[in-house]
Each structure stands twice: as structure tokens, then as C-alpha cells.
Length: 464
Image 1: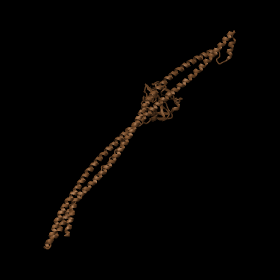
Image 2: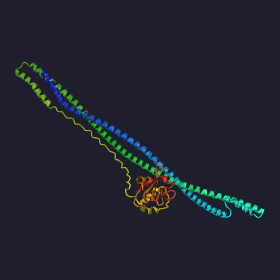
Image 3: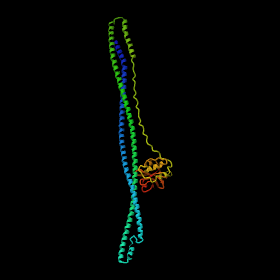
Image 4: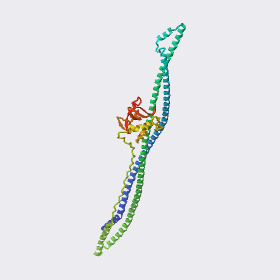
């Protein structure tokens, strides 16, 4: 009887396992998938947060740069107003110079007339205070009244001569003073022109630099936002997989529970049937040996059933889902502006430039001018070199930076000057210490490299 009960228990256990194990293995497989998908959701959320942080940082930087750009633009506009004021001052200085030159010319004419008058008087009476001639003039008087008359004449003559000499001295001093005033006015004009060109070049440079930064930040921000959208899509896909695998896991667990209940009911039925047979066999234990053999053969049949149930047990291999690899997005690099390499040839000769430069002699100075209506210093050099097919940078500082520096200048090289720390003036060297350029005081004209004004500001020479 005990053997019979043990056989029933083994049979029930094996049958139950053969039905439950495949379903349980399937449930465990879905649980692994759910865990992996949840890990992917968490990872993509971290990527989204990092991308959002990068976007926020880039936007803040862009906002700051745009503020700086607006400040520079406002500075440029203010500089334009200052330029208008300075140009008005230059124009006033030019008119004052013309007035001073006219006054100097008038004074020089008066001085010449007085000189002639003094020479005429010197033939009769010396003007250096020699009292002997005056005494002889009085002594030769014929009467007392004549003496008194001659004394009055001598007194008036001496006084007139002294006044004339004093006026002559005062006018000569005025001429010297006005000449110095005119030269000082010219110096101030050149300084103003240098400040204008230097400020303009610096503001334009800063404006271009900020515009490049704004463009680069826009590109980086766009790339970061693209990455963020990609991570959001990956997260949505992973969350969808979590939901799908969770539903499958729940279905598998329900299947396990249903199989367990069904197998329990079958086991109860089998056990009841087998118990009835055991009772009957006990009652007939005294029957013939053949009946006993029949009873003995029952475990064999049970064993066959057990082997059959065991052979029917199968194990399914869970399928692993690979997490898709992340794709890195590289931000395209903004091409950097290049400066053309300076010429390594012998340079441009003055003979090639001379006719073009002298053809615009006397053209007035015009801040920012690049045509025959008016030139500033770099506008003039750019105009002349363009006539022989050579393109120069727009500003004096740019022309200096891209030129080949030379210590033994030849006619046709550029000569550069500075005021403070920046290049502010440029002209074309013509030899013998002279250069031609557009100066605020003279327009296009020749002047000396080593003059009292330009000599201390000389930087060097550049060749194209």
C-alpha cells in the first residue's frame, strides 16, 4: 500500500512539473526583458537630462553673447555719432587753417611795408637811438622858434619810429604764433583721423568675432536639441517595451496559476481512484497468485506513465533582447576665416604705382573714403594697389598684418605709423625719406617719413 501511495505522489509531482515548468520559464524570461527595458528607460532619461542641461547652458551662453553683440552694436552707433562730431571739428580746423594762412599773409605784407618805410627813414635819421644826429638837427636851427619846432619834430619822429619798430616786432611775433597754431591744428587733425580709423577697425573686428560665436552656439544648440529628441524617442520605445513585456509576464503568470489549479484537480481525482483500487486489492488479497501478479504489475504501468510524463517535459531557452547601441552625433566644425599669405616676391615697384597715385593728388581726405570723391589713408592705398591687380585689406592695421615686413624699404613698399598701441596710418613709400598718402590736413599729398609729426610714430615697412 505504501508503495502505491509513493507511486501516486511521484506521478502527480512529475505531471505537475511537466506542465508548470515551461510556463514558469516563460514568465522568468519576460521578467528579464522587463528589467532590461526599465534599465534602458532610466539610462535614456539620464541622457535626456544631460542633453537638456547642455541645451540650457548653450541658450544661456547664446543670450549672453547676443547681449554683448547688442552692446557692441550700440558702441558702433555711438562711435558713428562721435565720428560725425570729429569730422565737423576737422572741417572747422581746415577753415581755421585757411583763415590763419590768410592772416599770416596779411601780416607778412604789413611787415614788408614797414621794412621799406624804416629803410627810407634810416636815410635821414638812424632808428637805433643815436642822439648825436638829433642834436645836430636841432643845433642847425636858425632861431629859437625853429629850435623848438625842430625839438617837437625830433620827439615825434623818435616816438613814431619806436611805435613802428614795436609794431614790427609784435607782428613778427604774431606771425610766429599763428604758424605754430596752424601746425598744432594740423597735428590735432591727424590725431583725430587716426582715432577714427582705429576705433572703426576695432569695433568691426569685435562685431565679426561675436557674430561667429553666435553662429557656433546656434549650431551647437541645434545639435544638442537633436540629441535630446533622439533620447526622448528611445525612452518612449523602451517604455513601450516595458509595457509589452509586463503584459506578457502577467499573462505567463496567469497561465502558471491556471495550470497549477488544473493539475491540482487532476491529482485529487487520480489519488481517489487509486485509493479505491488499493482497498479492493486488500480485500482480495487472499485470491490466487495470478491476481497478486496483476496487482504487482501496476507499479510497472505507473513507471511507464512516469517516464512518459518525464520525456514530455521540455525547457524553453529565453530570448535576450539587445539594447540598441547609442549613436553619437558630432557637431560640425565652423570653418575658420583664413588670411591670404603675404607675397614672397620682390614686391610692387613704385614705377608701377606712380601714375595711379599721382593721378589723384589733391583728392580731399574723407573718413571711410575709398573713391576719388575722397580717401582715408587705407582707402587710398587700397585704391592704388587695386589698379595694378593687388587686393589689400581695408584697414591700415589689416594691411600691416598681412604684409611682408622689410627693413630695407624700396619705393613701392607701404610705410606704417601708430598712435598708442595700434596701427593708425599708412602710405606708399616713394624713396628719399618721402611717402605719399591721404592725410586729414592735406588730402592726398607727399610728406616726409621722418617729419616732426610722423617720425616718432613710424612703425616700419611692409611689402606686397
